[in-house]
Image (cartoon, rainbow over all chains, first blue to last red; front, side):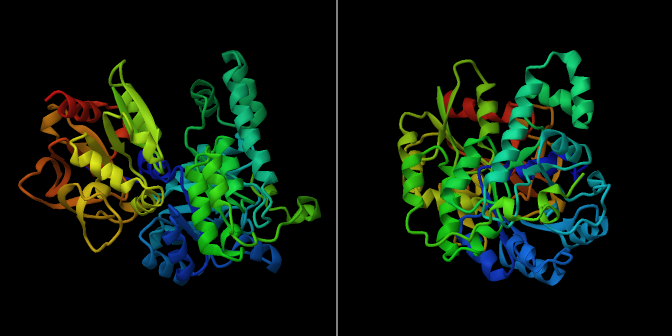
Length: 294
Length: 192
């Protein structure tokens, strides 16, 4: 009998997105531009993170009308965001038929202690993480894909780099540990022991790991790929720049050819202004999105 | 033997792993630029997004050279997006393609991700034991010309087919631990 919503099917879609770029879009027109530029998926939103940051207040799941309109416009997978812990927003998105749900710190959390039980859904989830423990807790809850949190809406890649280095460093540390130390490591990281064991044995997360949060240029994308991620999310970086179509295409090429400086130099030319950046130190601690999630 | 794996986007590493598991003399090479096609004995086009792959194939000049490889009889195996790239006809789409196989395909033919599934598939060509096939936003083959041999169907739908040294699967044999489909590709491609 055909089995739907299995772990293999959920993680499998993330495997197919690897080496690709997933772009935030707020209208069907933007979704079309992203698809034309070679995005492997789009994230349907009401506002990109930079605008959410500027607007303040409570940020919620997008209006289903927007999400549906985007789903009808493109043939590539469509993702959408729900608030951390807001399983009813997730039920609504599953009903709408989105291809992936991002339980995202970009939106205002609905629960300050618990994330969604993602195993209860047929639709797969991606979640943000700043370190290995956080990534493994999310995978333990059923996330089929992980991304760094970075600091969304800043156009500043420094936090995404910090989080990717942290996750990769912790994976290497587990690989070098004698087995008897892994239980204490699991306790210390607050991560399920079985997943800690799996990472120690395989030297990688059990699911695909993308980079997100602050990526604004082709060079940023290639940097994250060289640091070991599997693919790229670009939030505000495309449609807050002054030539979205050209920048989107360049980021896609840079993600494929991340190890080829000649191509990176070519695609980085004449893109116009990138999105305006934000210095992380200038953000009030309570406005840092990366600290949302438990 | 050296098999190229198109590495523009998608599940190329999983294919490399499966191919290398097929024999000690098996080597693989990631292909992102035309020069990397030189000297390969066969090519795998993995799953991923066919629109993304098609655009990158054009931008980096891979479409024509790969088509020429196929015309020259170099074995090519496409899975999911790779099957779409190999097809002559894609229902309702003008997207770039190699058009090497006389098949007509429908994209996302089983529906969106929530309809993605796995199931046991009978593939007589690789043995009696069913193959655990993973279908992800999968296409299927609507029709084939007489030059094409149908290797498996899911219900009525054609999901695995061969035309000479070209092989196309709508599912993802690289995501299961079972290397029989990859072995079949290598055997039919190089042992006749």
